[in-house]
Image (cartoon, rainbow over all chains, first blue to last red):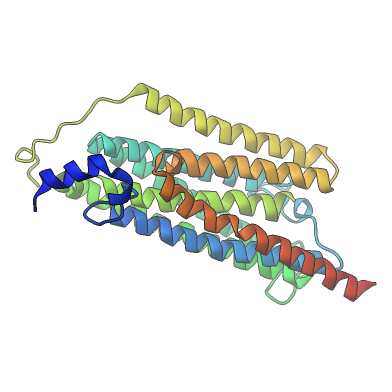
Length: 227
Length: 108
């Protein structure tokens, strides 16, 4: 391929040649672009779940206040509305920060840095999942009035429990997949796969997914727990 | 694996990049704390909900723009991501109106 003539024409008619092939108009790799497209489609799925939650809430006679339902902290018996879910939120934001630092280390080809920050990101994900497991268990067992299932819940309309299970469950599944993906990347980093490859772009791609999981939680936190 | 033959050069840490990451993290942290304070001090209603929605969008902006780096990508890519998601606003409006209507039909 004659690259010199190609660059010469680009210089004169840069805008027109952008979509003529041979280069990436968005200046991202194929994998990153596809990750973005996947995330857009995933955003639609989560939007549909949250919007249908809103519709069910608007059309029902009463709706429980999340502050009254989610008011427990492990190993204590005090009434602490939303504190535990707040801790979970901070854990997820923190694991997003460590992921950014892992990506940053990857850009500098710093294998030790990537290993360190990926490790903490995985730890954050596992801690979040454990918190969620406790939250679910507490919600299912309830306060002695039958607890909650897909067809019944002691706090209000059954739809509330069903949406809680579907939305936080779907999000939790994403966190779980994220932890698995992060672990694979961590494993490959330790083995030196990306040093061999010459770049750490896989860390960036998995990072996009991980930040998206954090992003979804920001919305779930607001619309399920705060509003 | 033999790293010697690849001859990998680890670049030094750019302090300004780290500082920027920590700044964004601090913003997310502070906004969440403010959300908490509002959750316990303000009576629920339209105002409280609007404040929460605005703060959520602020947090979403920082995560997508800085952590996911979309703010520094090509303009075309930015719009490819943002435009379809903006259309979700229509779904929100349509279904919330529909929900209100069902509520009126059922209980009044």
